[in-house]
Image (cartoon, rainbow, N blue to C red; front, side, top):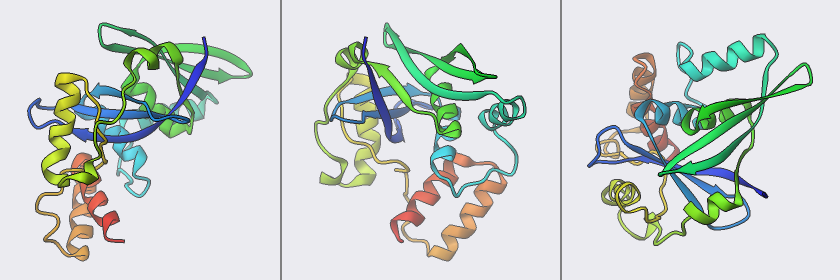
Length: 209
């Protein structure tokens, strides 16, 4: 079976399903998207890894795993989303130590959070993408971002239909702040380990550059 390389397109939240987030993976050489529902903790961990400028004062669980692996010279070479059963994706970490390869079972959200930290490529099988891959219905840029991001995630969670999602969507209240105020709030959010808020603040700062 042929492998298809994926990249992270975006991550956003659901207003109707508390604690539910949608991670959108995009095939590298095509237009199909693979939507994966993930939890709040995993969403924060992935957002932290994507936002290179946000540095937690203490290591998150996935950072701890990376530090542990580095200490014992274990490298995650790639992540493969290898199975889809009843809407649940199953993944494997392909690891290497002393030129010996090991395959470790992992939740897909954890596997992707680790892939980002190891700069490891993410793959799935073509058969899975054929089964679960979807095309965009419309772009979030065509409508107002603030009112549509959560609606778009809810469509994915409830109907399995695809829409484009931009990361860091919940910027209500942030647009009225100055850049200095945003940076101050970002520092407070990181210090208090509120990484979800930090990611959203960082996204609003990035929009103004």
